[in-house]
Structure formats: structure tokens, C-alpha cells
Image (cartoon, rainbow, N blue to C red; front, side, top):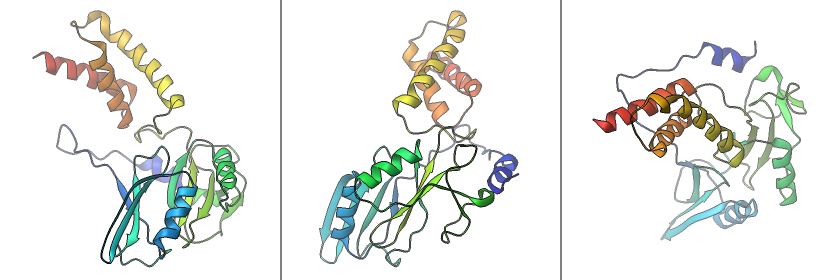
Length: 233
């Protein structure tokens, strides 16, 4: 059993006493750079969105967001004491690592070859343990490609085609949303005949949110039904 597989197979969800766990969503990661304008132009060249560029005196912060990401990142001046280029292993999810690599190359970015880790042991200490080519079985989570920004901050593209149980869904693109809606339709079709009168959108919304949070289809259907029952009281 691989290092990652062993951890995941032994991992159990952590339960809290709260009936509805508090959402905590990672929104921003700080990336230390030495030249703000150079970094800004580099990330713009990747096609990432510029959200903000604020400055005042000896302070400046630029916020950018990778395409399709719910998490943004900051870089700037007077923002962090971390040494420029000291952020390794900034991971981005892609659903096709070969296509992502080709796009970056087309944008003029120096990108490494696709690789997988020996014994599935992810690390950020250099190229040792990198085996050429994608994962031989093309498993989700196990194929990668690397690139760096001008300061040497390391970005790692990880190919994810199917999420591990309990880890929610991939980004909400058409390929993800279409089968999810079909799944919701089937579950709602089972629920609807014996249920009180309701608007299908309420049930769908509760179901989709539960699935995005990593719940199984069975758990999501229960959540959706509970929401409607609670609203009807």
C-alpha cells in the first residue's frame, strides 16, 4: 500500500458536537516575492485574474486568482517576513495535467515534464523521487507537473479526475456539474412521490451543497429531505 493510500484508508472523519459544522474556507495564500511588478506580470501571463492592487507608503498588496480557483493569493511589499521564493509546493488542481502543461508552455512558461512520485510519496524537497511520466495506472491525485515563478516559488499541478470520498467535488465545471445534476435528479425522483408538496429547487440546492461538502449521495438526500421538513414546520 502506498504512503498516501495508507493514510487515506486509515483516516476517519472527525465528528464535532455541532449539528452543523462551521464552514471554514481557505480564501487567500501569501506568496513571498522580491519584485512585485515582475511577479504581477508573470502571473498575468498565466491568464490569472487580477483582483486588486493596493499601495500606501512602503506597503503594497496584489491579489490574483488562478482560473477556476475559489482561493486567491497575495503578494506585495511589506506583507510578509518570509524570504522571497520560499514557498514550495503551492498546489493547483487540474483535470488534465498534459493539457495544463501544454497551455502553460503556450503562454511562455518554463514547465517540467509530467511525473509521478516514487511510492506515491509527495514531497517538496527537489526532484529526487520523481519518476518520469504520469502515474502508470493514471489514478486521480497521482500525476503532476511543476513550474516556478521568477523568485522560485514552486507551483505543482496535480491531476484530479475523481475526488476521494469525503473530500467534496472538483471545480464546478460542466464536466462535474452535469453528472451531479443527473444524480440529484435521480435521487429527487425517488424522494418526490411520497413527499409533501415542495419546490424542487430547494431540494436540489440542499443536495448539491451537501455533495460539494463531501457527503455521500445517501447523506445528501437525507440532508435535502431534512431541510424541507424543517422549512415546513
